[in-house]
Length: 160
Image 1: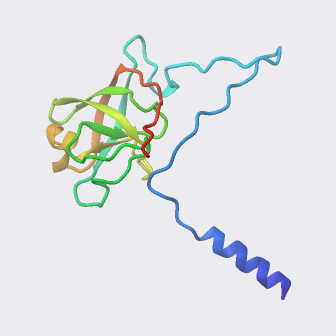
Image 2 (image 1 turned 180 degrees about the horizontal axis):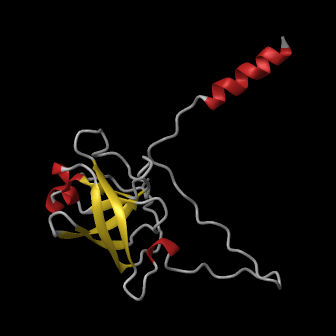
Image 3 (image 1 turned 60 degrees about the vertical axis):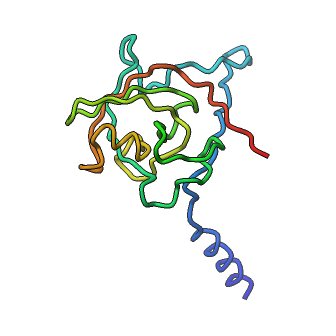
């Protein structure tokens, strides 16, 4: 009987779903051979390419009819589907990216304020408003060229 209770508890906790938004704490700074903490290096390896910090991402969008508009984003601010914002798994909050959609040639600047996307094969989730300006809503998903305009600090908004 005791084993059945333990198995039941394990089963209950293994079936919970992950939240759409979550805070990703900064990783601990690695220690060098003398035991001192090393400073965290920027930019993230994904965007290192010469001095332009450019990469090609698979982009999607969110916020149109999925219930996220008006809810808190991962950095604590209220998500506005029409704002020029985006979600990325690791880029620091506040990072500004120039995003160019290859099919239309159109570009927008977006600010990272959320975490995601959580669908395999996608690198960045644009707000609905940014996707409309790029022409991405017609296709839903597409390749974009991403260039860092300004690195963010990673700070979150604190609301009472």
